Each structure stands twice: as structure tokens, then as C-alpha cells.
Image (cartoon, rainbow, N blue to C red; front, side, top):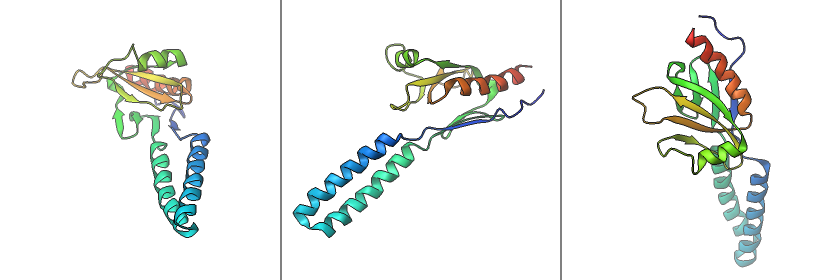
Length: 157
């Protein structure tokens, strides 16, 4: 079995800049409101504490990694080995929207981000796995599917 060359693909589903700007605007307005009511230093302390919490939430939410490597397909802490992958296909924005809503299976493993309009669908061939497929948001689903197809084709040989 030959190993594919340079086909490890890693994508981090980071939160967009607009979300950081919205959070910053919220914190600024909170600082002004609390500052006028309680005093500027108390407002600054409260806003700094809440700002730390908001930053932690945004960083954590945007830290999910989609990884395609020799060990399998991984999303966050979830991983599936290549022997159990039944195809990886990129979805258009319209297909992704349909697979999130009326065309969805309630048993599917979903890792979706509202700021990403496209996704990949990873078929699951493991009869013991309750998930028929994974639906994973990606910035570049074509690259994820291409990297996955290189590994899937070498494990099928």
C-alpha cells in the first residue's frame, strides 16, 4: 500500500473577524453603561472580566480542527479511521443548507458553524456506529474531499 504524498490537510474553523468586532462593540457599550452608573473603574473591571469570558468562548468555539491524515478523518475530538469511511463529498452552499434542514438525518454527526456556508459529507460504513454520516462545515470542502479521496483510494487497494 503506497502512502499519499503531502495529503495531510488541516483546517481550523476560526470565528470570523465580524464576530470579534460585534463582541468588542458589545463590551464597549457595556463599559459605557456600567461606567456611567457605577463609575469608570468599576465599569472597566466588570467589562474586562466579561471580555475575558467572551474571548474564551469565541476562541474555544473557533478552535475546532478538521484534519485529514493517514490515521483517518478527524473533527475536533471525533475521529473515524479510513476503513470505516464510505466516501467524502464536498457540498455546495445549497446542498449544505438542505442537508442541515429538511434533508437531514437526525442520527447524523453534525459539526456546523453558522458562518461557513459549505460543508463536506463523510459517509460512515461502520455498522456499530449510530451515525450514518458526518456533516462538517469547511471553508474549503473541495480541498478536504480531495485530501480524503487520496487516503480513501490508497486504503481500498
